Length: 320
Picture 1 (cartoon, rainbow, N blue to C red):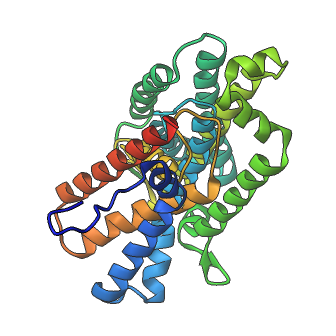
Picture 2: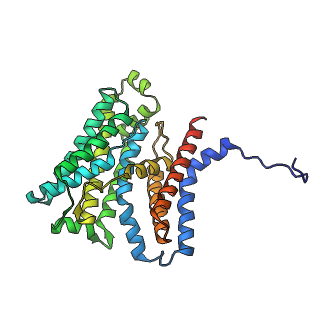
Picture 3: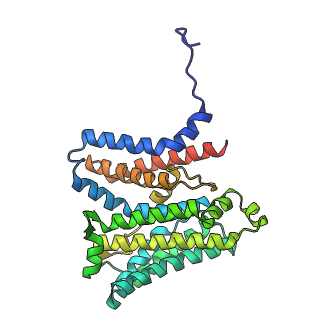
């Protein structure tokens, strides 16, 4: 009883924490939308929604690949550097035509993912160590290949970054297709079920005859490929290739989007709808702070708070 004779209100964490992990990301998105509708001028304009949709594209695409990796119990810190590597390849091979340049960029991303996957699956290196090495080495290689910013003047690349179909930017169409593909893979294919099974218990998967190593290799290749797609689209949108800045620290936003969306860090589960909502949440958070003239330092603090909250909820869920 309290001092005034009323019973104390007690919160059952065993119910609240799972509920937060299931629906917290959607509540966060809704809260930011309500805040912006009420207090941010011109937020409901079509141009603003178009801008928000385009800006969230790189984080969303990276988050899709990251969700698959985290579902296996791993992590990929190198996606930002792979974006930079893909951007460098676009600039270096654009003289052979835009199709060749894009294909080379995608192959480079898949190759980087294959290196990560081979280290994790066959060499037994911890994912955080293997991808940290690629994070450093990939960025360094991209800067060796393209030491400074290079403007992109190709009409096809420019159209990819600025064009639209039926009023919707190509970048948004591409990200929507990738979301649909990943949803299909996770829910309808044997490969998707293997990802979840390996994340749940890798040893049990090995004993039951699952191709654990090949599956892990494929997951990291896909993550690298998605990172390369994000790098190509970022280059097209910026109309410039700048390996020094493209993708820098974006891996933190991707990891946060996945974890906030309900995919546990320990693996064994993947939530694509939650991941999409997590990417939207991160974009709205940054956009809101910028539109209200808060300095970049506040943006970093806010992102840090979201990361800490997401990890805490995931940790509490893991104790159940």
